[in-house]
Image (cartoon, helix red, strand yellow):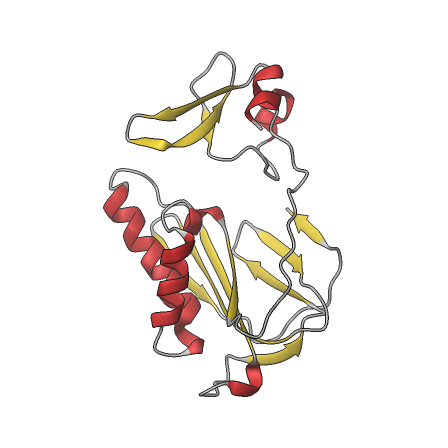
Length: 199
């Protein structure tokens, strides 16, 4: 990733307050400081090595897998994989798991970056083994994952195709916009229009 960016004249360096986060910068300007090498949008960096081709890995779902968390970088920027798993596992109910995770990310942003604008956070928790659900809620929908889940705010809409043949409960999606936390509940999956689109 770094070699591709440098060959295209992009610069890579971390901010002093985040030495563990390498960021991509324009050749002559200290902007935008993108914390990833692959992204949709971010057109100002497309000529400098940032690409939209995803790096795909596969995981065969096993009996001991409990849930899948789909989240935007606003969550992953401040919470590790282990923190996300622990947060979802500690949720008092499946229906509150996504809300709990976004609220945790929101708190982490305020603690780690008190002077920064909080990045948008969207979370969808998909609980596997829905036949073993300990509670039911009107915000849960049991569905074969042949459809898509749409997460949207006033300015952004994303449709994600999920793998087929897995039974799961689609619980909730939550969005933070700037410093305001707003909640959107996904109660009905939408029909897949494309495998992935980013407006």
